[in-house]
Image (cartoon, rainbow, N blue to C red):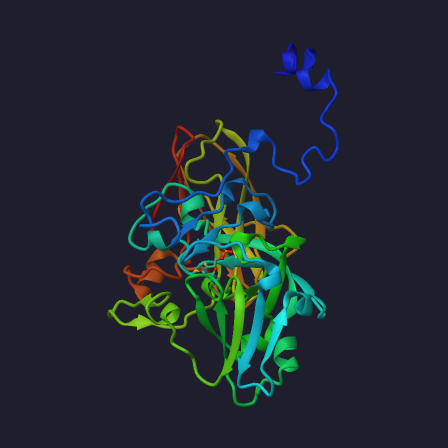
Length: 390
Ligand code: MTE
């Protein structure tokens, strides 16, 4: 309402006085009016708040970068404040010379910065049987995407003379109470794995592994070991507690599948999404995120009629390897109830499955690696609900 709007006609309080001085907040904070945008726990999901997860508010993000303070968290034994002066990284096992690096030693080495997504293997895990949680924050919020800076693991393996002819694996070990350990293939270790200290241009946040974490592009979050203290080179998988009883896929025959680490092609519409409400008929920019642990996103299609017809969305640049890709598509809502879906295709040609297709292979009793097409129902009232379509 431009005519007679007091917000235009009358000066606002902030335009009639001196503002705050520079460096009033030496480390900047979001506007107090954005206080509702927070990472959140899912009530009742875990028995303790240390062995738990907080979900990133995907519905409130633009572009592809997750603000550091809103990166999701997943800890097995709480997060810790590690003193970088006391932190060490050891590389041992099948190497010519085992070495111990300080943070200063590591940060002198040639570093690279790359943007990658991290997704917990359990993301969307509550939805295997039925639509269970109301918002995209809870269905897909164990997902973040940042620019990570660090030294390629290959540089350290070369430095220690790793026996890369005979050793096929490395073990990464964390320095928190959970002593998280994960086996990583030598192929990945020599390819794009980073020993990282930087996140979005600053040091890692404590919750995300300060001062050192492993970045394993395309692979489930559990392998991105935080507070990284040791890399062991070996010739067989370690079958540690974190890979024998956790992060295994229950298949329909009751047998667990182990070491399925790649996060397959997936997408979700973040706006509009569950828990939001449309402001009446008319134009909307439908927007969302797509990603694949196997490469780049090639195409995203959006359906406005529960998957009967599909339209190709616009991909925002940059479109990077093993990275979130933002998609947008124009939509004019006529006010009638609809079901919105997005379907991503990656550079290998893999097409994100419908629930029916995924369940045919995987059943319904799994927790991990659910990459099915998400459906949002827009009711006549404009309210948006999480529903599941076959
Ligand atoms: N590393 C250690 N040392 N301890 C942990 O509990 N959690 C893992 C992984 N690395 C974990 C860890 C899991 S299950 C995930 S999904 C990611 O860290 C989450 O990383 P984030 O907390 O930075 O989002």
